[in-house]
Length: 449
View (tube, rainbow, N blue to C red):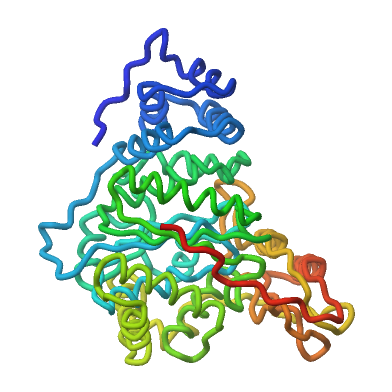
């Protein structure tokens, strides 16, 4: 753990380091460590942090800079050691680069725990147009997304999984940078994304990591080539830091599942875990990532074995029980899988959005869907904005599906009629409806090892 900030000298003034990166220079390890120390200890102003982030956004970082930056972010706080708990399985995690309607973490963590792993998942809040796992969990009354490290470890040991946010002890430098990136238009920077993800994962003391790198209209990496670059960078830096990691590049040209919005996504995750409803695309992505994680950890020796083990965690109810146990141990209500209606917030205005003309969904602007949810109050326009956890979209139509009077584009959940009407206009504009069935695209584009 870094206990003292690097010493500022005439040659290591923060503004000079920012200027050098702005002008395309490759920063030294000392320069990177000073910037990261300033993030963690508060000696850099918010303006300086934003300026550094923008410089990196435009100028990037080479491999050495990325590894140094990531490891420095990790060292700004505590690095967890699980060896004293005598756990009977590996410490595992999964992370997504962000999408719309992505509730995979809520499903995968209890499944992997029921399959023999331990999942101490440190997640983030929404960035830009994408939702955040922590915001979804905050819709559960009582659930503590910011427990002490001692409490976090107890939940993991007791239930096999816990999903929390960054605390003041884990990667505090990244915690500050994360919030500033969200409001300074620097979210989509590969070096900053890599460092943000991996500093938290390295701080969690995990044995293996599976990455879900999204591509498409609802992803930060809208083009496949950009997603490949990001996935390869994450795997490369992780291996450079000594962490077993692989990545899947998955499609985000439509929302993942049928809902988008915090409490609505929790409901869909509960339906998946209990078998009440299971969207095929959500199932495919979740299973693919979970299978890779079991293989990477050595829990199973083949994809078929991993698939079988994971399906049994759902069929037996073991995964749902793990989720319920995690929620209760984290301060939430008991038996949430069966009592969700009693606890999750519900919006007062619910209305269907029909297309202007009946037809087939040919294309969706998924980013526009994410922005519509933010404008409903389901995300943040500014860093300190409060979220309305009840709002969002359910029963969202997918590409290739017929829509019309009896088959709406989506169901809007809103706080009032005005925002519902605005969201309806945004949803209609996001859908391209025509007469031809589009050619199917792969859900999983590539595997990066």
